[in-house]
Amino acid sequence: MSSLRIAVIGAGLAGVSAASALHEAGHQVFVFDKSRGCGGRLSTKRTPVGGFDLGAQYFTARDSRFRHALQHWLDSGWAAEWTPKLYRYTDAGLHESPDAQQRFVGVPGMSALPRQLLAEVTFTSQTRITRLHQADDAQWTLEDDSATIHGPFDRVVVAAPAPQAIALLDLAPTLQHTVAQINMAPTWTLAIAFDQPLPTSVEACFVRAGPLEWISRNSSKPGRQDSDTWVAHATTAWSAHNLEASSESVAARLSDALAEVLGITLPEPAFAHAHRWLLARPVEERSWGALAAPELGLYVCGDWCMDGRVENAWLSGQQTARTLI
Image 1 (spheres, rainbow, N blue to C red):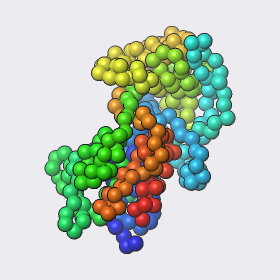
Image 2 (cartoon, rainbow, N blue to C red; image 1 turned 180 degrees about the vertical axis):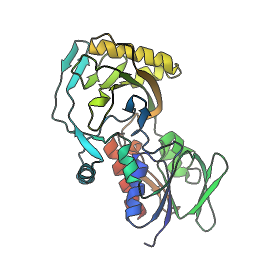
Image 3 (cartoon, rainbow, N blue to C red; image 1 turned 45 degrees about the vertical axis):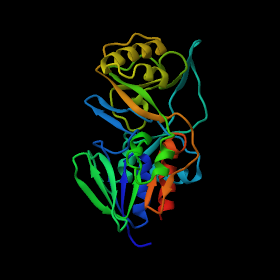
Image 4 (tube, rainbow, N blue to C red; image 1 turned 90 degrees about the horizontal axis):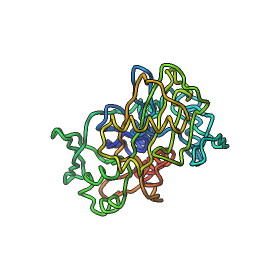
């Protein structure tokens, strides 16, 4: 196949994975994302007190293809294994809960991994693509929310979250109908830091009671040179119930929940912020891998094509690249 001009809409890991594979195959790849940076839920919030992994906290590696890619990332210093002191919190209280699961993180933050994978690809940030157009010669152009036209392109990969992808698939009604089946759940995330380390040995905790479902001592991850930083994820049910609450009130309530899980009184934080992920994870698991209308030159990928895990986002992007090629 001769070199194609390919647009990828969405710079989460699925889009990054597809873009990287297509670039390696010799194609000209142009990635667009509405955010300031890449990574989607592999985002790292930079603050004066350090970085916070607000989305995915770590990833696992089961598929042999993903493990092969992971080995390259480990060798390159883009990722590292994280072996936290693991706990579980239930109605019976807090207790140690070690397991044999290998966990990996981007270094020095989760966003470092997608940033490295996009290093040789043309990336346009802060550009929200709102509509796709296809000319009689099958060439695609992209229109953004300021009515600027980008292109032309030979192929288009839509790697946006499912509810956002729907609006871009008017020219492929079958794909649009399929994507419309996806439901996404929200998550409120607390990022909080302290001048002195909290008096606890907890570095990660699965929470099974109250408004929280996960706690991590973000500063315990490899490569983090920060103050004592913590990230806590609320349950999807609590997040949905408090979807329109203010960031300040959510931060206060989740801070109280964090203190209850850890069994300590929290000092005045050096930093506290609550971030709302409206489209945090797919509600249902799928086995689609990726979607395509090859007769149109239009392809769709995302973690929501499978089960929402980081590994499956990467695999979905890889499947899209193979199908396109």
